[in-house]
Length: 90
Image (cartoon, rainbow, N blue to C red; front, side, top):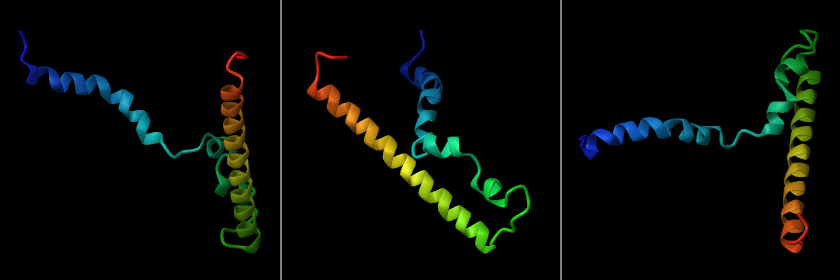
């Protein structure tokens, strides 16, 4: 029979993939769906990094991302409130 100290590393090894999901915390699915801002704002190499057009594009992309996250958060909150107020309607 194995001792408890021999099972601890095995248990940790099995739990590691489950804990790896915690590392992704903070990365928004909306940010992932919008793609690479740098590549988008360079427009295929036509706009130089640091130019006024590039800076304006990056600011616009930030505003778009923030608005999308606010809408997503609002929809999630509204769904939660609806479910709390209407427990018999799933």
